[in-house]
Image (cartoon, rainbow, N blue to C red; front, side, top):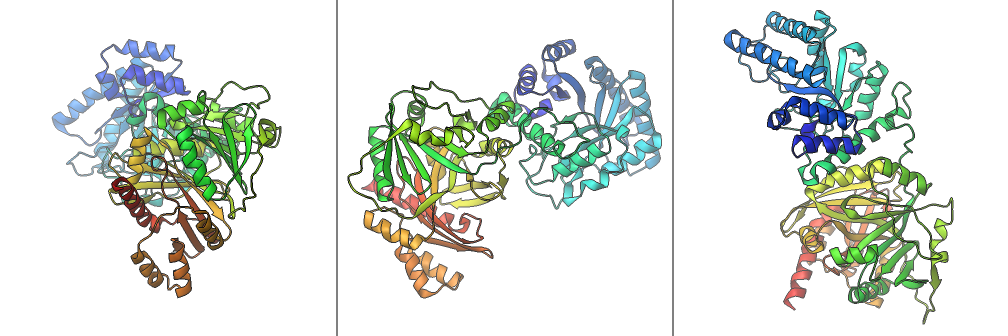
Length: 623
């Protein structure tokens, strides 16, 4: 990992990179220049941490200089080559020039690189040349390769950066004719979109693998097939200062190991980065959601659940914990005054503190998560209780795993006793959890994304901008391949958006809403009207526009209006939504129905919903 991708001073950067699991670093020269110690101090610390300094980076603006400017550049080159040797790095990264006023003169540039190769040979150092997309003359790796091939010096080769190589939708296949002995170093970085325009400045850093949309698996596969066996490095990625040095390094480790492991499982020419790393877990459904509450918020939550026709079915054999159920939805209500849930309530107030996922092999999922840096979650297990495998993810959230290989799937029968029912409650047709939405700061979104996609088989949809009356919220949807588990990551800033207010009131990230699936939302709506379920009221103007926009039948428009439902449609199908009024500090329930192959979340309706929630809160405060 490049030290430039981790915040903090150099000693802390090196410690964090080593602790995360990396065995080598790209040492950024600015980090070294700011370091108050000596070069030998850096070498000593790296040795103590079992870190190889693979490369010193970067040497800017090398080729095409003339006169005194060229003499100064060559003198600076000698100093950097000597420094690289003293660090034991063996490789110096040289980037092609952007700030040059000279016209392209291939003969002069060839002479510069010939001098570069000769001096590197004398210092016993290799030089890896990286073509920068914003360079004036040499802006593609193929141009650099022509020069490297012509000079044919063993100390002169290429550095490749996946983001630069895959610009403008370029395919990695064009690299398959590169000789492996000429590729010295490979940096892996992603981009949020396949750029249609070149990257213009060196300040435009990339994303971690898997956070963007570039086909990095193809890039790695092509290089593995040509026989590349050098370092795979995280370079040119955005510095995650909000996560601190430790968090940034851990995210980087998860991202690069997961990418290389995924390719190596089907590409024999690539060695697996971790020999016994289990495959990503396939989440086949939500087993439960657990709320941490006190007596007061328990009453508010269970009253809302009752109006949604949930039944209190079981109570824990020894704890203040209840199970509320409808269809395949299990809601755990925990008002214990000690333990993890109590700690979560103390920190965040009433909140979703735990999530249970159904997986094929619970122990395997935990083993993978631990190998990638997620701490295993453990707490004392009482008599007769099951030790359910769990991990603690980003933001302190806990995820438990239920499989059918053991008694884990019988947890409700083993740990809970049935409760007597005063009267039968007819269900409202809520079948299962459709999706869970978690709200976090903008700066944390990519970290949550990396955690989920490297641990589980989840596919991501493009990021959507949601217009809140007080700002913008970014929404990133994740789902299992068959849609059994859907997660929405919503990034908010510090402004008083509805999501931002939730963050402020909760003192950090958390689950802000849960959506349940109904097979017939109109029938569900009629039943909930009888039970007193409080839902958001939508403006009349919305339904007038809806009828015209989608050419809806007048009866359907009336049914939507009567049920205060939101509606969306695409080429695959239709989507219906009912929003409950907010409870606690901005948490809310949603009921949805999907028809046909609709896979979205009603993004066009989000501004309408957010405005309605804001009105509701303002009216309640005024009252």
